[in-house]
Image (tube, rainbow, N blue to C red; front, side, top):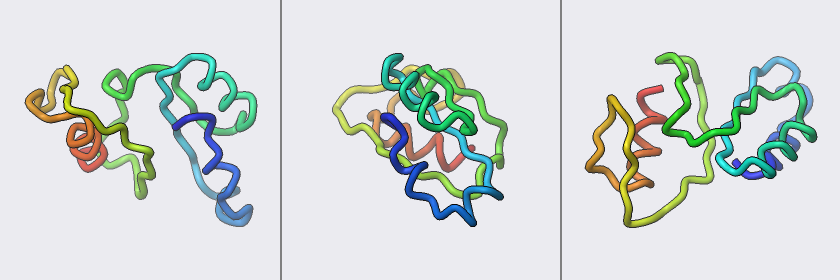
Length: 93
């Protein structure tokens, strides 16, 4: 998510009727995002530690990390590489 610049690019007429969520693992970056976008529900944690209910999101936008390592997350296919894990978790949530 970074500092959440994409939140600032949402047209105002859309942002006022939208509930926004963000997850950022890096604490300083997450605090900057919270300061810039106080109305957004931002969690500072790894995405694997987020726990959103199924079917909460109508749209998911991401800056998916790519790499040849795997994430450990209970309830998900732990044989997936990080980028595939993010896609699977987005589709399920």
